[in-house]
Amino acid sequence: MKERTRYIESIYGEDPILEKVKATIIENEMPSISVSPGLGRFLTLLVRLSGAKRILEIGALGGYSGICLARGLGEEGELVSLELKEEYARIAGKNLTEAGLGGRVSYLVGDALRTMASLVEKGETFDFFFIDADKQSYPGYLDYAIQLANPGAIIAADNTFLGGKAMDESIPDDRVKAVRTFNQRIATDDRLLSAMLPAFDGISLAMVK
Ligand SMILES: C[S@@+](CC[C@H](N)C(=O)[O-])C[C@H]1O[C@@H](n2cnc3c(N)ncnc32)[C@H](O)[C@@H]1O
Image 1 (cartoon, rainbow, N blue to C red):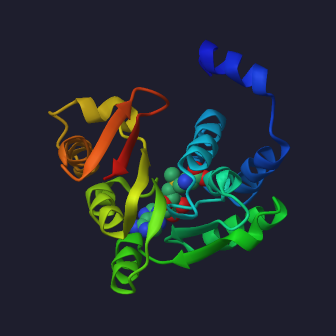
Image 2 (image 1 turned 180 degrees about the vertical axis):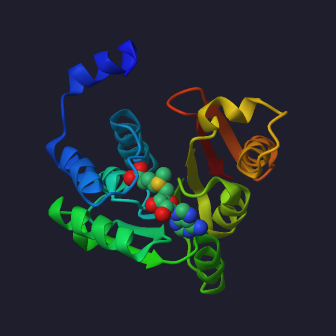
């Protein structure tokens, strides 16, 4: 852990609910790729600041970011979370229930691009998006998020530096190309107001006009 991160975490201290989520991820032999505590707090703050009532999360894993997002919602708020693996969605759901947030979340299992296409067909809309699933699909997730967005909706995406690889044009890898395409589009699409923050592994933020 970097010195700055260690300092921040020493101020906030451990969050027992989120520590338990991390433990269940290890117990269930899932990858330890949840958002960091600092990004989790930032997501809670962003959701609360935005006043979002309906969130679409893309990539649930064990529910760590789901808890952080749901914590920012008001009493009436709802989180819809998309996850490829049924077992992960089940574990995430259990973790949100144990965190006292089970009533606010529903999981849609399957490939998120397909699920988002069906949400568009059904005319569903959301106020906040958190993109944190497979990197190849980031440009597609952005396109669908814009279609599913209420005016003023916020789109947040994690790992837009891709561990530093996004800055390297010479890497002929589909994941890198997709994230570079995503970064270019979110920065230049006229329908969005956006910023890319050099924090964590790169956080991109946009508001749909
Ligand atoms: C980085 S993890 C999500 C971490 C989670 N947001 C958190 O911080 O707690 C990525 C998740 O996306 C899921 N995923 C990967 N490809 C997917 C797809 N095509 N559709 C839906 N989910 C997918 C993975 O199974 C994994 O659970």
